[in-house]
Structures are given as structure tokens and as C-alpha cells.
Length: 268
Image (cartoon, rainbow, N blue to C red; front, top):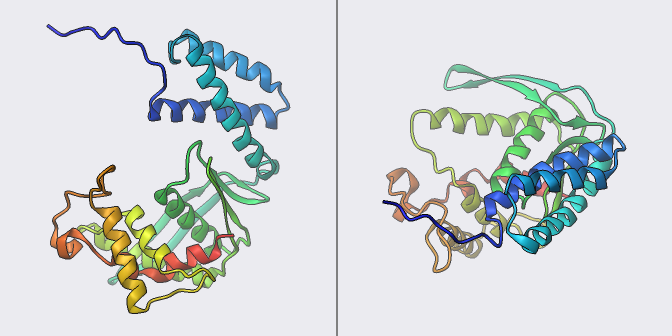
């Protein structure tokens, strides 16, 4: 017979907090765009959260909710000037030739404005967020649309600068080839590990460095991110496939540094 837990939460866990911020951000952005009262929107949101039992008990819930509001309002204020003039969604239909086979990249780019593509999340910007935003940016650039792309989180606001269509197509070709080959064999896709490896090879002046000492430092940082640490788990500590190199570690991101480095170069 199971034991019924009688302890009451005093704080939200990470996922609960993120979901609440995400919902509140959407509501406050809509209120700002449509010139509705933010106080009324927040009061209704708070009442619904309390009625649903989603908040910590007593005053802890009110404190948590107010802290969430302050963070979300700041984020919404950053996003609002960028989303005032929306544009039509942009259709993506790009053909690539990979190993003699035609591969088509198709879809739609949404959240497009006069300011450019706008991507945001109600949390910190992760490595995978930067990578997916970079691919969206490349798809828009290939079409000849001369626009920037914004990526906004609670910790930073990144801007990807305009990119030549021909160069963007070359970067996408590289990525599509990796994806295509990944359908038949495992690829070492570890975005956080790749990110620290690339960042370690970029000097303070923004130049790419690939001397032996820098590469050694980069591989050390990648290994630290990839493997388990004393206080945190690694990105993929259980991987043992030969495809990932010695002891599960790989210098894959250094082999494909050209378009990854370009991503960091274009960030302002």
C-alpha cells in the first residue's frame, strides 16, 4: 500500500517554473501588443494559477509569482519593439544534392517581422536554441531576404547579422549532409559540448585560433562538458560508440568549425 505524501511545496520545480513563465509571457506580450491592461491580465492569470493549485503554499506562492512577473515583464519589454510590424510567413523550399540524391528542405519560417526573425524563450538561451535559430537564419538568408535574426532569453539577447545568400547555402549544404548521413549512422550530436569547443577556439578579438595549444584547451573543455562532473552530469556520459572517438570523446565540432565559427562571428 502506497504512502500518501503530506508535504507541501514551498517552491516550484524548474519545469513548473518554466511553463508558468512561458504562459505568462504569451499573455503579457498579447496584452502589450493589443494595448490591454497588463495588471488585469496578470491578476486573472494569478487567480487561475491559485485556483488550479499550481502555486506554492501561502505567501510563498505570491512571492514566487511576483518574482516571475518581474522577470517576464523585463523579457516582454525587450521583445515588444521587435514584433510590432509582422510580415507574412516565409516558405522554405531548398534543394540539395547529397551523395547523388536530391534532398529537399521544406517548411515555413514564422515569427517574421520588419526587424527580422524573432525567436525567444522564457528561460536561458541553450546551445540547441542557438543552433536551431542559426539554421532558421540560414534558410531566410538563402532566399535573399536581407534581414537579421533575434534570439532572446532571460539571460541574453543575441542578434545574427545579415548573411550573403550564396554563403548561407554552403553552410546549409554542410548541415544537410550531416543530417543525411546521420540517417544511416550515429552522429556525435552534442550541442553543449560542441559549443564550448568552438568558443574555446575564438580569441578575444573574435579571430579563429587553431594552434596546437588552443586545440588542446578546446578538447579539454569539451571533455569536461561531455563527461560527468562532481556536481553535474555530463552531456552524454554513457556513449561508448566508436563513432565518437577515444573514450567517447570527439573533435567533431572542430572538423566542422567553418559554419559554426561563422555563427559566432555574426552574433552582435
